Image (spheres, rainbow, N blue to C red):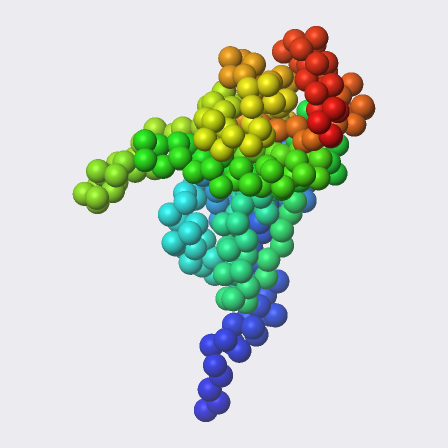
Amino acid sequence: MCWVSWPAFSVFLALVFSEMLYVVGLGLSDEKDITLKGLEAVKGSERVYLEAYTSILTVGKEKLEEFYGKSVIIADREMVESESDAILANAGTVDVSFLVVGDPYGATTHTDLVIRARELHIPVQVIHNASIMNAVGACGLQLYNFGQTISIVFFTETWRPDSFYDRIKENKQYGLHTLCLLDIKVKEQSIENMARGRKIYEPPRYMTINQAAEQLLEIEENRGEGLCKPESLAIGCARIGTDTQKIVAGSLEELVDVDFGGPLHSLVLIGSKMHHMEADFVREFAVNKESFDLLVKKVEESG
């Protein structure tokens, strides 16, 4: 009898069967933002998972199921990060779709899933879509004038991180804008419930532009380097890519008081340079056009 090692046999199976794991971007709005290629993959899959903790659509899984004609399994953080074997089970012999709001490579978790599939010799096809990383151009700033993207997390009584301030500083040194992705808390446990092993979860929380601006102003008070002052120019972007998107430009102090509505929110900090076409475009979103013109002039003078 000829014995073949399992890794070699796994490679053989992957070559024999053409089925695979599809990682499908859903775009930013609702069930209809999926691409035709993505929809074909979903319709042909035996199992369909929806990653439900790094971002959200404007519709629930029921709308997706109705439009796709398939049952959708919600995949929370615990499943994706600790129980990926359940998602990848027999994905080399049947098609499995893993749905991601935005673009599949918008979060490192999805990269981890692809690496895990490769280790198991499961073929993977990534189907891209729009994400906030490119749709933020809707605010009027040119995408090639953006620097490093940062994430702003919720402050707690004992944890108020500000390490991303250095990334803002580096971007400004080159005249580049900073896209700030704001924190999302989904299926989080309180410290007490976690300690007691109780599967009780806190209500979902989504950071607002107002909260992000307030936290940046607090960090500026502590750091004092002049990057996030009350008069610093910024743009608040809410629900980009949806029918209800809202874009407002102004100082951080002004944005604190703007009602941006429901999630998801993002914030853009203007760099030390601003092209005149950017300024002309963004002006239409200004809280106050006169004060906006003065802020733009200050940017030009400082640059």
